[in-house]
Image (cartoon, rainbow, N blue to C red):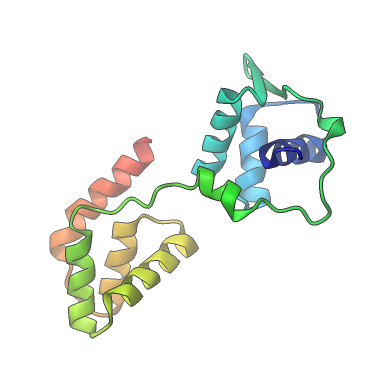
Length: 162
């Protein structure tokens, strides 16, 4: 059986109609056009494919190290959660995550698990970090989380550096 990563790469190359692409011509369609990955996940996917020697990079041009013509793309192909999970960003939470969640939970009389679930949904929907999503929840429910703003800001800048 062909590795799902090869199917993803073959899909992108076949879709483009080219045998050689720039890295951005691989990761942009994965994230922007197909919405299979976040932009960071797509870049990580390309880097991992280079590390695994599935892609070969020559200056600014990248090509597959395998014959993409021999890779059959299943009808309606979409990467499995297992493959996406390999590239998935770790959910980065501020050190005081428990305190933020606890404060929202206490002030809204909502179980912690439900607050975490809502924060996760907002993170995914808006493609934002944990701290920012928690601050949005707090604002929505008029819960003062001012003491966490600096930490959330640091989290944003740290993620953007990576």
